[in-house]
Image (cartoon, rainbow, N blue to C red; front, side, top):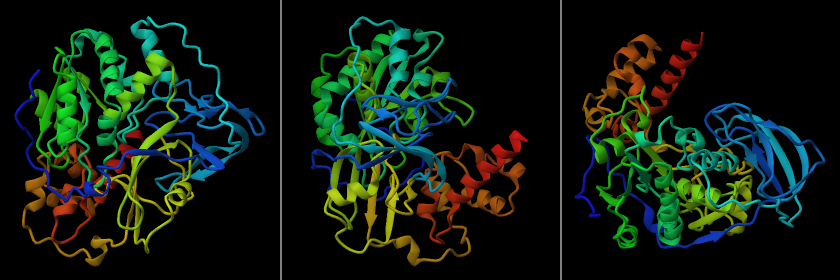
Length: 438
């Protein structure tokens, strides 16, 4: 199938992509910490409960925590060893949550893999994906088995593989498309078997020419797979943006892609699905980008539960004084308080920045330039919403479309007054959700 002409969405921004640091660096393996920590909520949905206790012996691939809730995802050990503690530890968001701490014995003894049955039904494939602990690996963390569980598989018209990777610095998905091309296509075949009426679109921004050319060549005889080359613009990889650009269908905050016949999954998620369905392999490692002027740039594969401290040590430590550490991209990531925090299923990167440019400017009064309105991909009026947010007026926030904010950070990025509008909108959306539960 042919590659489409470049398309994009209304609004958005063009930050420096900063991918030159790592885009040509192959993925390298990082060893796990001596102490591996597994927070019990690494996904959207119900937290898991421990099914092991202190002093239990653990093997690689063993389920150590799970939940009876449908919207949840089991926690699986990436190492063998002994359960050292079950206690509260800090996660990447800075919150304390119950975690299982395992003393890594370095032997990596694995649980027996029962992969005798090759011909699987739709339901059996869903069960393998669930048992593997797969969630959206692009950062959202929504349990993949839930997303793929549909009443009628024939209702899925489009399966969209998100290879846009529009956040600055990040190149892990790009490297996966280059290094695990066959595994990616095999995963797509698994999914197209599950959804027999669907077409698959592999969406890639046009700053990733090698991946586009490679996948186009690999898929040239595929009748249900098309490579879609998209304009490089942030947040091109947003779910609503992709669905609109590729299918012409519009989503709002109350809708899921499935409501318009679409499913969207990240490149890494599709590769994990292939490993789970074809080989009964669980999700126990994460491919991440390590970048910024303060550290040796790398693309790494690291066992889940490994501390960021261990990653930094294996890469030779910091090269200079680091002003800011960010877990995730600079647009939607979160500041890392310290390095004794574990990698989780949704960790995408560690950025070690030597100069926090935003900190050089103090927020000032809005000059009503309208730039935030021009770049908002949700077609909102951020300056008005920000005034509402300062008053904590949740009713006015809802009436002015505040719940449609996708928290992409475009408004804050472009604001000459350096107002942190995105953070204000996150707070307001949280207040709305709290009020609904009352």
